[in-house]
Every structure is written in structure tokens, then in C-alpha cells.
Image (cartoon, rainbow, N blue to C red):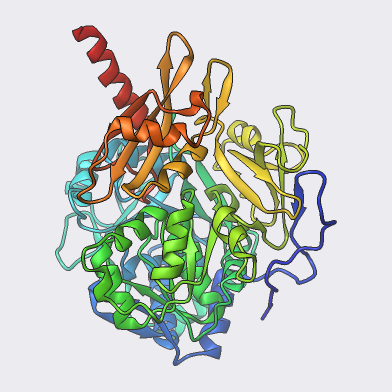
Length: 574
């Protein structure tokens, strides 16, 4: 079994140009996910592998392996073959986990479908990559998945399972539903889980011998803030190694228990969660089908979790929960905070109040599997709270200007990365791939960052989020960081709105602490003491919530649209 060291790169220090190369002295894993999982399961058969708290399920690695092989054989039995696309449309549950590993074992490409998709979005995703099968939950919150599928495919009412021929979904043949009820035209998940025979074992073994670690194994749809989402295509080699390198950065071992409240459909859950755990034989603990702060706190205490993942808004929700102080979280040591830029104040509170002294910030994007930069456990505290760390092993990161030239250290520019983790491309879309990955293999992130002389990167904004007011470049991140130091501010989101005079004006939406008494004048005065006058927001709005994605990312483009409507209506009412 390959072992990879923690990322400590050998670079000339101090750097003069903003490029840092992760070390390459330890080899990467060159196995498929299925083969690697079997090594781990055979090495630690009695070790706890997975807990689904809301399904009251606990499996050892031996039990997990048996269930995965059973589903893999069931998929083969209905004609799923290497390269076929299998969609998974569900909140977090054991069926999701089994699908991830079973499809990998037979070389099928698992297509992650956002649990919040509506029929039109689902239709686009399934058709964009040509899914042959979809495995779906019955419903989740306000989403009735089976009803939406019936709406798109009325032909199900007159079809036998596996024989669907649908005008709206021409590639789809199989709809595999979770739950015990029967639905015309659909196969039940439990029907795939037939006892293994020698014949099915032989068929599974024969298929696995054909697979390469460089085969495509997963398609992740990037969030389509403009236009349709794009299907980032990732291989065994991409995501398995990313999971391992992150596990190394966390100093994870088979004794660890990682609490995973983040969604599986995103790389955070399936790579930094599931693959991170199996890379070391650790236990994956899922508190619920979706994030709930109280449940997460309860499960961390109950299971004595040693690690906890989350986006910043999840950690804020736990820290601010009225019952937070009731829980013993002293078992926690580490975890990853990623998915959005983390406020320094939140990072410090997580370290001090949640015992997560070794919590790490991960940075990247779906297209790089997803992490390219990460803080290090033994880095100085300031580097761990104020930066997103340095390039992981086998990864290069650089900062470039608008002409593609590497900028000097401490100068802002676009963050680019290159290495094993970069996606194969967007599914059957050469043009969009070429617009994101240049001819030298560098993935362009669209994020604005600065690299210091030791290779540590600080994210200061998005190229599209950057505000240009009267010719002055304003990075929202800088203003947000200042606001997080205000004792009555819980969260802040800064963005630009159109202005005839200046091109753009600065706007901020603020969430206050419970019971806070603060007004616009106080916020303006507070910022006037800390930032240049042109950075002080023209518009200040106090809100209870932000428009968010399912993964907890703030959707500033929606906030911009809502604010524009509000300002336009105000002008026209005068």
C-alpha cells in the first residue's frame, strides 16, 4: 500500500515569484478505488468503517466490503458496465455511500446530482452526460424525487424496470428507487442487493481486472451561477490521492472518527469525507441526511468524534447554537474547514471553543478533486488562521496577472494550479475545458489570491466579485474580515451593485449576533476607522439569512439581483 508524506515542499525560501511546488519525493497511489478499499478492508476487517446515525446503522470494514460487493454485483447483473454513467440523487445515507464504492468497483461513472435540483435541472444533468441509470431517494424536504421523475418520464407508468424509453431522457433505462414501496417502471434498491454467488463473484473479479486508476470514475456538476452547470470529470487517481493527501495533512489514522455533516453529492463529502476515511481505515460518522447543528453536536459527543468537517457557516451555526455549551466536544482534534473563505475570527473560535487545535483550512475547487492548497498542523498559528496554506504534494500553485505572467510575491492575481488532481476536463466539452485549463495544464480558478515568500496563499476575492468603484479595485474579503471583528456582527457578505456615477458601489448584508443593537451609522463609523473611505459600503442591509447553495456557499449573485431590485424600486417610488 502506498504511503504519502505530509505536504512539506522543497522550494527556494523566500520566494521572489508567486509559485510554490508541493514535494514529489513520495509516490502517489496508482490503484483503483475498489482495489485500494479492498486492501484497507482486508487489513482492518473489524475496524469501525461507517456509522449512519439517522439510519441506526454501524458497519465494520468487513461488513461494508460485503455490502459494496453485493451492490456492485447487482449493478453488473442489470447490465451496468465500465464507462456507463449512473446518477445518484439523494441526501446523505448509506445507499449513497454504497453507490460511490460499488460504481467505482465496476468502473461505472457515478454522476453526483444536487439534491436541490428541480426537474429542468435534473433533465439537463442526466442528458448532458447520458446517464443509463439513476439511483434516487423517494423524497427529501420539499423535493419529491420520484414525482419529478414521473413528470419528466411519464413513460414509466407503462414500462418495466430497465426498459424505459423516454423522449425527455433518451439515454435513461433504469430508475432505481430507495425505500420499501413499489413504483411502476422502477427497481427497488433492495432488489439489487441479492446474496453473492460464486458466479457473481467471478463476474465482479473479471471486471475489476480491466480497470485503470486513470479511468474516469466521477462527474461533479460545478455550480452554474451563469449558464448551465459543467460536468467536471474525475478519475480514481484524482480523487483517491486527494483523499489520502488530505488525510495525511490531518494526521488521520485508523483510530480516528470523522464526523461528516457536509453533503456527499459534493467533493467535500465524498472525497474529503469517504475517501479520506478509507485511505487510513478511519470511521466515517454521518450525523444525519443533511446538516443540523444540534444533531451534529450530539453525534460528535456521542461517538467521541476526533475530527469534524464543515463549511464556515456550519461551524458558525454550531458555535451560535443556544445549547452549544452543553456538549462535551473534547474528543475533537482536527477537521477541515473548506467550501468558502473562512473568517479569521471563526477559525480562532473553532480552535479554542471546539478543541480543534489542529483544524485545517482546505482550498481548491471541484475541478481539482477538490483540494490543491491546505494549511499544516505544525504551521505558525497566524498562517493557519489567515491563509489557505500551501500547495499539497504533487501540486503546483501560482498567482498570475491578466496576461498569464507569474506575479511577484505579495501581489494579487489569479490562483492557478497544476498536477495529479486536475480534472480530465468537462464532460464532452472541449471548448469550456480549454477556457479553464490552459495549454500548459494550469487550471485557472477565477479566485484572486496573494502568495507570501514562504508559499502561503491568502484568498482576497473572486475575479467576478471584485468591485471596481471609480477606478479603485475593492476586494470584498478585506471589508468582511474587518466586520467579523465587530462584537455584534455574526456574519457579513460584501458585494458590488451598479452605480451610474462610480460604475459600482459597495454593498454589505450583515447578520448580527442575537439581541444585538447596531445600526448603519455605527457600522459606517466602525469601518471608517479601519479601511479607506471608498471601501466603506454605500448600502448596508441587516438580514436574518442569505441565499445559499445546498453546500452552504453564499450566493452573492442572487444578493446582487435582490439588492438591485430593491434599489430600483426605491428610486422609482420617489
